[in-house]
Length: 173
Image 1: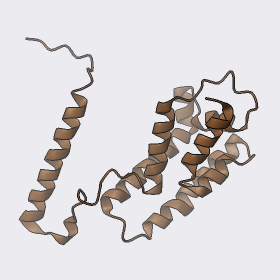
Image 2 (image 1 turned 90 degrees about the vertical axis):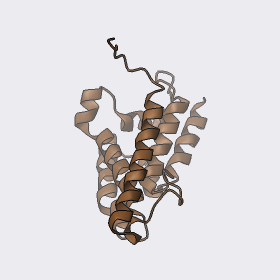
Image 3 (image 1 turned 120 degrees about the vertical axis):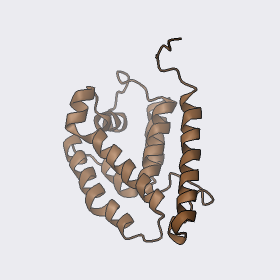
Image 4 (image 1 turned 30 degrees about the horizontal axis):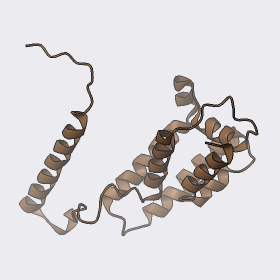
């Protein structure tokens, strides 16, 4: 993938949150960008979702979780522990003239970044409208039964996905 294609792909991903895109593509330092992103997340972006009373609570959880994940990825402590800075990497991909010494971003990198930004923007589509049960409209035993059924379905789905990947445990017979 050529540098221009990489920049276009990153631009396309951050189009979902224009204020973040403006920060990411600015000429500021990585440190300034880190602070500006944190300020944007805390003061502007999340407060807009706080005021959106039509956003289903499950979708709100996804938005908050995605924001938390992104903020954790940007923390200096986590960058030191990982030995890698996502923000610096993205900044270098966008602003360095010669990116030949950088590892080229994979399709997986772009997919993960896309899903993270989708989550932050409230468009993750983890739940379609048929899956988001309006628990607030149902009360008592019926609500508990529906929640229990939904949780069982979720657990079964997780098990089916987890069963695809060996985790190294040896069973004893």
